[in-house]
Length: 409
Ligand SMILES: [Zn+2]
Image (cartoon, rainbow, N blue to C red; front, top):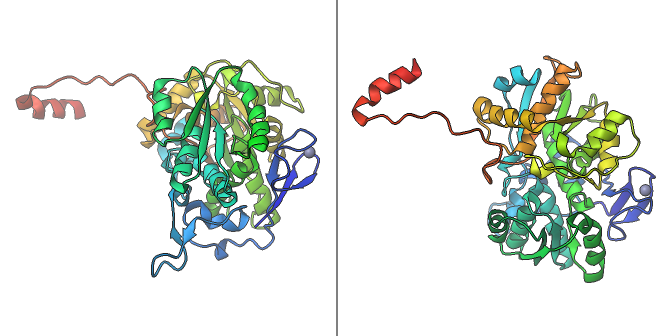
C-alpha cells in the first residue's frame, strides 16, 4: 500500500497526511508502486477493489461468513466500481467513431464519485476521523452514503440557495448538512484549512484519496481491453480530478509495462463554463478562472478547477485534447444516449458523445477508432436535459389493436 504523495509538476514528494497540495501550488496524488502489476494476478473484486494493490486503503472485505475466503464485500464501499463497459453501435453514426459506453451510473449512488468516496471514507474510518465534502450534487450524495454505511460522521457544505430537491437527495443519507452563505468558490481552500484545524478529512473533488479511487474507472476500461487498448477515452472535465485520475491510471499501467500504446485522453467541458478547454485552445500553460456561466451540465460547471492545470497536462501528454460543447449539443447527445443506446445519462455525461462528434468532425477521431465514452452519472436523479414528452395519443381500449398496428407500420 502506498503512503507517498507526489506532485506531477515539480516532482516533490510527501507523506500521505502531510499536505493537501504541493508547496508549488499544484495538487498531489498517490504514487503507487505498479512495478509488479499483472492483469492475470488480480483478485475478482469486489468491484473497483480488484485494483487494491494500487490503492492507498485496504478493500472493505471481511471473513465473517464461512466460504467467503476472507473477501465478503462489506458496506456500500464494496459496491463501488465494477461498472459495465458495452459497445454502443447505434451511437457510432452520431459520434463518427466506434463507441463504447462506460456506465458509471451503475455505481451505488449513480455516479463515478462513489469510487473516490469509497477510498476517502475508508481512509477516514481507519483514522477514526469524520469525513467532509464541498458539494451540492453527486459528490455530496456519494460521500454521505458511504459515510452512512461505514458509520463515519459526515459534514456536507452546500450553498445557502440549494434547491429543496437536492437537499432531499443528500439529506436522505443523514449527514450534517451546513448551508454556507458566501462565496461558494472559496470553500474549497477554506475546507482544507478547516480540515486540518478540526481533524475532518475533506474528500473534495481532487483530493489525493478521491483521485486514487477514481483512477479505477480507467483501470477497469483498460482491463476490459487488455492486452489491447482503446484508441481514445472521452470524459467530462470539471475540477480536473477525474481527468487527473485517468492520467494517473495510464501512467501506472505504462510503468508496469502492460500497455502496448497510450490511449488519448480527450476531456470535454460545457462551453458556458470551460476554462480548461479555453486554455487548451489558446495553447496556454495554465488555466485561468472564468466566471463559470450556467449550463444544463450543472455537474461540470466549474469556473475555477483546482486540478485544471493537471488535466491540461494530461490531455497534452497523451496526445488528447480538451474540447467545449454547447448546451444544445449536450441536449442532442443526452437524447441520443437514451433513444439510441438505452442509457439515461445526466447532461454532463452526454458531453462525451457531443465531444466525440466534434473531434470526429475535426478529423481527430475517425470511424475506425475504438472510443470509450465515460458516462459519469445517471440521469435518473433529476429531470434535467430530457427531451419533451413524446406524442402519445389516448386510444380507447377496444381500438387498441388497430392503433398499435398503425403506430408500428
Ligand atoms: Zn509541486
